[in-house]
Length: 115
Image (cartoon, one colour):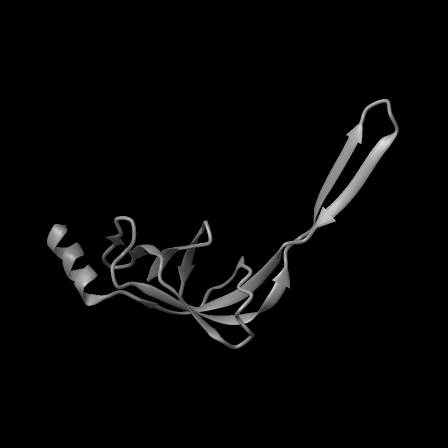
């Protein structure tokens, strides 16, 4: 079973047991659990597509730790003027592991009825 979730403007395709990096959840400590309610699609034996969200569906993730993304180098210059500036940025991310994908019974019944 897999799900497509939305978190802070980004969409992720997740499966149970998968480890992924999401945008920084500053309130989350290592070992805590986060429930993500914005589920756009749940797939498996039967696919349930939300309009825009799947009713009663949620994905539970466990925080593994905080990490930083690869460095992005920004280089600015002005031609013929000897002006050069090099800066870098590393985005803070939260590494999580998907523990459970749940679908409400009413949404699964609606999906079967509409199919």
